[in-house]
Length: 325
Ligand SMILES: *[C@@H]1O[C@H](CO)[C@@H](O)[C@H](O)[C@H]1NC(C)=O
Ligand SMILES: *[C@@H]1O[C@H](CO)[C@@H](O)[C@H](O)[C@H]1NC(C)=O
Image (tube, rainbow, N blue to C red):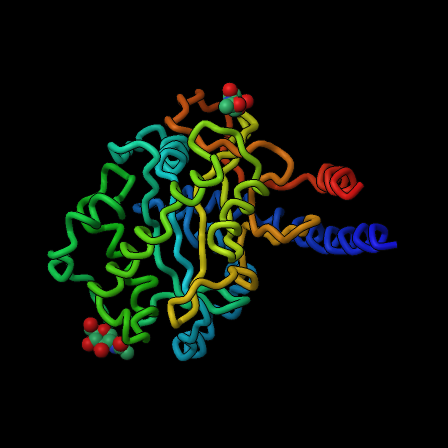
């Protein structure tokens, strides 16, 4: 009886999530192509811009600028760490002229951003149109920013990435007194990285670069360590048919306490229910996730290579059926 119940519940959840997948997967390719054309000054495409297809869908609402300007409310802060090796690979594969600069240290996660987010919505973003970015305000933490919050894109001039993060996300976070200037905002990211360093969290579960893990193992490692549900992001290389771990996001309340990322409009990620939990991810649920120690060599491009992983609904059904039996 109990098992049967679980099976049906899982099945229901699965149908729900795969339907959702179908809806969004058709828009994913389109939006990722758009971001190629986007001159991609920062590797921002991997950030919330990969989620932009949701705003594309709702483009009618985008015209209601007044409404958007008024509603800068948010519920949580997403803190995103990236695996620079994958970011670099992604960046180089997008365009062979792209170069990247990687941290010298091994097993070294870097910061992508601190993003105020309203549950069930994108953003808010660009909350203060009159704000500007002043690199001088970050003088005292400049060395740390260069080390822990670096631009992977080797062609950008210093500060470009931080400027983007500040104007898009920082100006919204600034409604909290604790984050109301550049220095406080970037210091917060640095402090969180130190406290919640992903290499430590994964390492304590025995997950190190070059081990092949699954997204469920990754999620379990994080839940075990933090007690909260993260969101886990991969890029999928269809030339190699491999998923690479790229970002792990953890969530905080406005009181700066850890919280589950459940309820965050996940963009290209979807909540997938499996017996034992829900994993919010765009990674392939039943295949190994590569956490590479080195940037894989480029394969000559014959066709557009990067696509977001679209979970094959049939395989997913099989996997979950198998899992629950
Ligand atoms: C927007 O930015 C400007 C320039 O930094 C600042 O003077 C102003 O107080 C900010 N407005 C809000 C609402 O934070
Ligand atoms: C991980 O998978 C890759 C590709 O399938 C393989 O080359 C590598 O040996 C695997 N690593 C481990 C530690 O199993």
